[in-house]
View 1 (cartoon, rainbow, N blue to C red):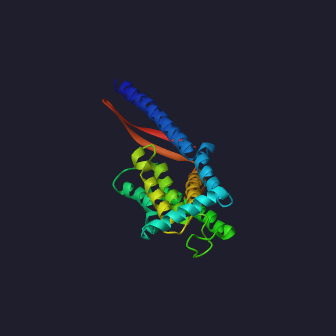
View 2 (cartoon, rainbow, N blue to C red):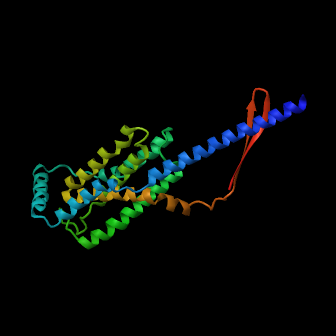
View 3 (tube, rainbow, N blue to C red):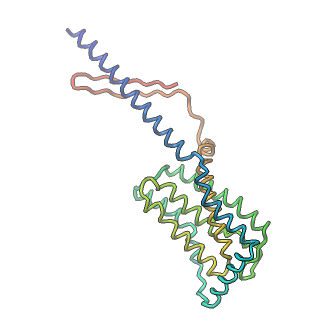
Length: 255
């Protein structure tokens, strides 16, 4: 009788161990599929940034858009708003919110290390785009201080930060996800009110910012490998199996 009981307990442990092994495999596949979807490039995500960048580029040579730039500057000069430097700080605020939400326990798509890699990558990409363009285009600023007006670097940073916030929380809480865009718009508007940029510079900067973040998410699987040690190809998992009348262990070996 004891032999039969031992055989039954062993068989039940093997059975439930196999079920849990299959469950782990399914969860692993679900995680991999989700990660693939998050980082998979799609052309639809390029529509908005391409349109914004296109508007900015056309504004450099279009008489109609140049008139819009001049009329906007004229209206700003008429009302003479007080120049503030708050836009120097608000450009980073959406990204700060991502880390703030993390601190209070609101989890996004990635952990702290991963989102830092993504945000850092987006800033490197935006800098690699914006800085050379400023020196190539050489558009004079509205206040005449220099010829580095196009595109707006502050607006690029603001929208890359806002889109970073959106991508992290769009599936968790849509209101949290979009909360960075009003801040980014504020930053862009004040770049014109401070007489530092034309409208076209700001619109293009918004497009480059969104594009930089999208590229950072697409590149993340490759970039992340540079920050992690090479993982072993073999994974061993041992876990307890507790049933009403038996105690055993499950064993999973992935090659």
